[in-house]
Length: 68
Image (tube, rainbow, N blue to C red; front, side, top):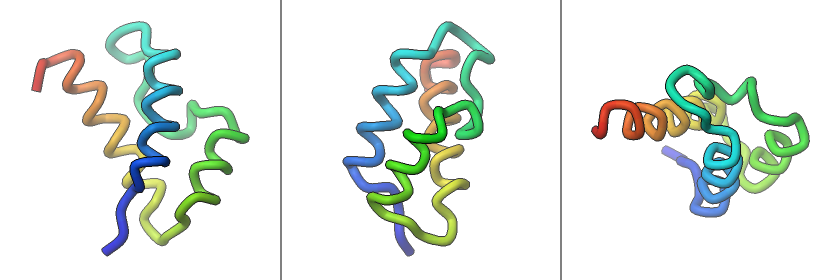
């Protein structure tokens, strides 16, 4: 099973940290700029990448909101 690479996570983290303004402000990959999404996919494309990106984003948001 493939997963997000550290480079992909770093790109997501940068975008997330720049755009997070509180609960509900970021909730899925559809909110990313298209060029950033394309860059992340080019690094390591695989079948479940969009689900993994959304899960990673949601985990980051939940950690900030709920401390988990």
